[in-house]
Length: 143
Image 1 (cartoon, rainbow, N blue to C red):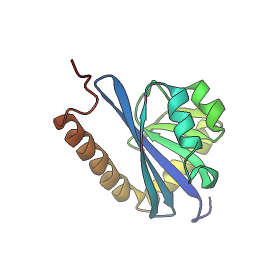
Image 2: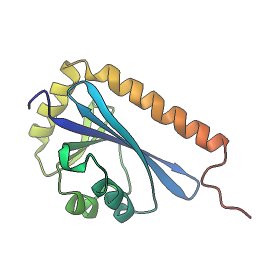
Image 3: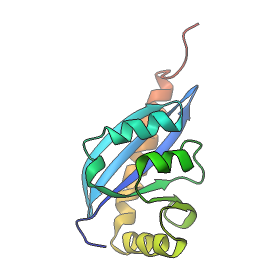
Image 4: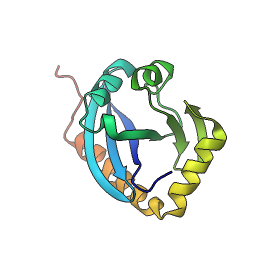
């Protein structure tokens, strides 16, 4: 894998009756861009990513989550990019479009390149943002 290869990390969390996602696009160790999405299903999430200005440059999507209800077979078919579902870059939960061995090689490469520190920062940013949105009542329906 080349150092300039664009890899996207996607994280999602439920807020009341919807899910919020953060897509972070990396070029090597450098963050190239961050986008937030709101989705109610995999179609909405894949449509948002497809319309992203980064979509054409992304080579691999890494979902840093154990399980995500919207990252599934339908999502993969629409996105048409290899996807790795992983738990904190430690264990691979599932892959789409590449083998477990290929996914392990990619994750090992990311971890060896001190990518892990950047992921910890992105993780803190995402969950800090979600905490703020929860405090503000984002996603709650008005009664």
